[in-house]
Amino acid sequence: MDTESTYSGYSYYSGRSRGSHRHGERSRDRHKSRGKDSRSEKSVTITTPPAEPLLGDSAVRGEQVQDDNWGETTTAVTGTSEHSLSQEDIVRITKDLEDSVGLDCRRYFTLALAVVLGLLVFLTPIAFLALPHLLWPEKLQSCGTACEGLFISVAFKLLILLLAVWALFFRQPRAGLPRVLVFRALLAVLVLLFVVAYWLFYGVRILDSQDENYQGIVQYAVSLVDALLFIHYLAIVLLELRQLQPCFSVCVTRSTDGEMRHYNLGQLSIQRAALAILERYYCDFPVHNPALLSASKSRAVKHLAGLKVYNVDGPGNNAAAAAAGLAHSQSRAMIAAAARRRDTSHNELYYEEAEQERRVRKRKARLVVAVEEAFTHIKRMQEEEQKKAPGDVMDPREAAQAIFPSMARALQKYLRTTKQQHCHSMESIQQHLAFCITNNMTPKAFLECYLTPGPTLQYSRDHWLARRWTLISEASVTSGLKDGSAFLLRCGDFSLVATTKRLPYIQMSEEYIDPKSHKFVLRLQSETSV
Image (cartoon, rainbow, N blue to C red; front, side):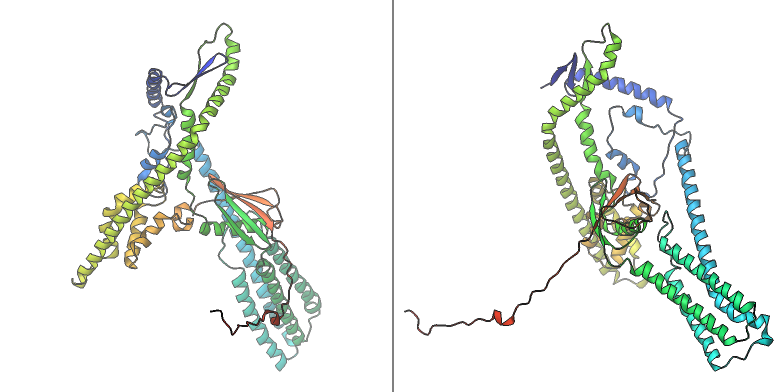
């Protein structure tokens, strides 16, 4: 039954009400799309995917929802060029190159500064011991047994300090942070001031006066090495031990699908807390799949796609006034019509989800049967290969390529239905199959990574290696976490929202219970009723 409503001289019709009129609209759209395609042959934009998906780009495009004016918004790909780039792509590539060059320069500058400071620290005690022998060797007093023992002490302490500094500071960097680490910078400044102070004292009291007591000079160098060891202990406390005790509970929510995790963190700055969250994100959160979010968008598009507003009275004599109120009246008519259709939208959602679940169960059953048959065939092949000569045994890679076509169609349909086709390439599936065959794994173990979405690190490096995160925070990223502080980690088309709550102070009390209070006596009557 056709639905029709009139508001302020305008008439609203459902998209299914006028068949002949829609036929005329479609013919005009097709004519308009052909005109657009003929004029857009030189506007070519080609984006090369990072990995070869199992279904190709056509499958991904088939899942996307096309609007009524698809001919006007479609980019025509012709044979004029295969490597064309738009101005926006050139600007984006240039900006990425500049950012990467800046990050590399900053990282190498920090590494060079750390190496220079480390050489200054380790060469200073040796210089303290060597300069008197080079400048005034004839005036130095002889070094006794105690002085020679101090040489051994200095040597071993420097070796311990070298290993400790290498283990704590010269590690592979996990990430590039936007600001410098405050405690590391303070420790570097403290070490620099400490060494400069020792050099000033050494220059004034020893070099100028050409001190003859060489044992005192050696003890002065030993005191410097001892102080450097204590500074290294302070660095361990500030950089490693201080953050171990949990003080805050951080709730991390992904903005697109609402996936949520909670983590306990210690006394960290905002940028280090963001780094800790990202390290756990790649292991705890399921992979981000934008294709799963297209269902709600398609429902919204279909909900308003069949609504059109027509002016049945025409512009009339006062065309300016009619044009001014056209947009306002159309929007109010669309809102009123959408409100009337909202009452039945939950039924559409219910049946769509039920149909999707039925299709997934059906594809899953076919996939499980196909994989079990393929693995049964592998067992038969292994039993037959045991009877063959050693040179005729099939490699696991060859066995995977031999049985893959028997399960490829079922796996392809299942990945399409669950919208995971862009996460798994044919090469990665064959490698996983060969790995399962090599380690004698069951069909269920092979299918687990396809039936259950795993963390991001489970998939190929193209899904997570080149991602750049942007930290957005109202407070300074070098300030510490506080109760109620919030920050955002943005990456591409989604973001992670982190909110912080301080862990409560727990008050515990002890209650003593006398062990004798649990004793009781069970008395049985000797006489029983008959």
